[in-house]
Image: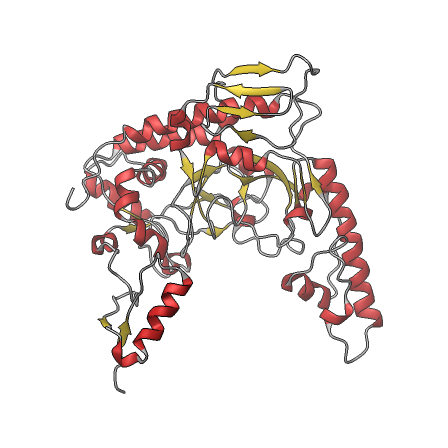
Length: 443
C-alpha cells in the first residue's frame, strides 16, 4: 500500500473571515497554494512545531496500559474523568433541602415515564417520541433512556447525597447515583463513602484537548467533569471497592522504585511522590515550556535536580487548597452603606474596573484586594474570579431551578470565604514563585 502524504497550509490566525475568503479567491486553484509537507510524529500528531520532544522522556502521570493492568509505566494506576451528570441543575445544589426536593420530583417523573414506557408503548414506539420532553420536570440523556428501556426504576436514598466541589472553592451537594448521573467515571472507587473523604485526596488537571489555560487543583471531595478545565482528569492517592473497603494505594510500585533510584533515597514515600507531582505541575517554567504538549496529552513528570524541596512545597500547596475553609481571613476594608440595614445576602457580586474593590451587594463593598491575588489562576479564571462566578443566585433557564449560595444558618459565610480564598491565592503565588530550579533542557 502506498504511504499517504500530508500537505498543510495556514492563513494568518488574526485574519477576519473576509480576508480569508479574499485570499482563497486570489489563489483560484489548490495548485497555487504553497504547501508544507508534514511528517507526523510517533504519536501521529501532524502539527508539531510548538511541541517539545523531551516531554516524552518524562514519566507519564497516567496511561491506558497501566490503568488496564498491562504494565506499571506510569505514576498513577487508576484515574478518572470528573462526574458528568448531564443534568447539573437537578443533581447539584448549594442547599441540601432544595436538592432533595428537586431530585425527588425528578425521580417521580422518571419512574412514571419508565412505567408508561414498559406498560403502554406500542410495538413501533420510539423512546424519543414517547417520553415527556418537558425540561421543567425531567432532563433526558442517552444513559437515562437506556435505564428506562431496561425498566430500571429509581428510589430516593438520603445516603446518595454527597459533598462535592462543583467548581474551585465552590462546595455543593451532589446526588451521586448510577442512574441519575450520566457518567460517574471511577468516582465510585475513589470516594465510595463519606468516610473516604477524611483520608483520600485527588489531583485534578485538564484532559486531552483542553483549550483553556493549564491549571491544577486538589480536593478531598467528588469533582465535576468541567471542574475548572475541560474534561477534568482526576488522580487519587487511594482507590477502594464500592463499599469503601479494600483501600489500595494508587501510586505504582514501579514509580516508587524510579524515584528512589533517581534520588538514591530509600525513604521516599508514595505520599512524597504525590506531593512532588502536585508541585511540579505548578511550576511556571514547566507550564510555559510544555504548554502545547499539555494540550495534546496528559501531563508527564520530570525529575528535578532536587526531590524533597518540591515534595515539601507540594504538601503545603495541597494543605491550603484542600483546607481552604480553615485558612485565616485576609483583612479587607468594609465600605458600608449607612442608609441601608446590615445585609450579608449575595445576588451577584462584581469587581471595580481596577480590581481593588468588590461590590458584594448594595450594602457592602470590600476594598483593599491585593493585585497579586489574580496571579493564582485555575484555567481561564483566577481563584477569586471563580468565587464571583459561582456565588450568585442563578436560575437555570430550562429547568427553572434556582440555586442560591446564601446560607441562612451562616449569613457571613461568603464574605469570610472571599477573605480566605485571598489568603490561599497569595500563599499559592508565594510558594510557586519560590519553587526550586527545575533543570529543564535549554534552561
